[in-house]
Amino acid sequence: MTPLKKDLQRFEEDPQLQAIIGIDEVGRGPLCGPLMACGVIITRESIQNIPPETADSKTTKESVREELYEKFIQMGLPFIVHAYQPIEIDRLGVGKANTQSFIECKKIMETQSPGKVLILADGTLKIPGALSIKKGESQSAAIAAASIIAKVTRDREMVHLDKEFPHYGWQKNKGYGTKSHIQAILKHGACIHHRESFLKIDKWEASQKYG
Image (cartoon, rainbow, N blue to C red; front, top):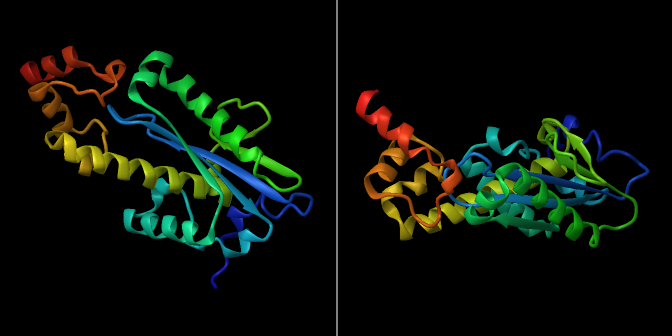
């Protein structure tokens, strides 16, 4: 088996640790749909079986992400996905929702971790008891795996929601603010899955009229 990139084992190689918990999220920026965070446990034993294609979900093709997700399932890799829905994002703000989703994943995965564990959170959010790693998907296999699982889970949710509201094009845009998505909102109005705090209807209408 092709070995995992050395850069992704920076933390997992520590001989004093039994496991790494990696936490990452997707969906901060879309106009609709949930923000999803994922916590993954990778042990000293399971690191040997992590597929070498594992990397940041943003730089990984959709087909590869899907394959990696299924491989993680087959491995029995322990993980949890925690979602904050649009109504909660509007109430809390996306930053607080992001922080709280990380904390929830940390709490749950800590109870499943064997022995001495290091908890890594991607980005710069301050999570009690966790080490925040900027661009962590390129430094930890656990964070990279969490990134992929969260991305695949959210994308599948948006494809499912597209069947209920096909005119927004969520199957393709996954809820992000593409030109066609914004035009669909102006034509059909927003729905229950949109984040009201993210919608800039006045600016969009002005852009359509004067832009």
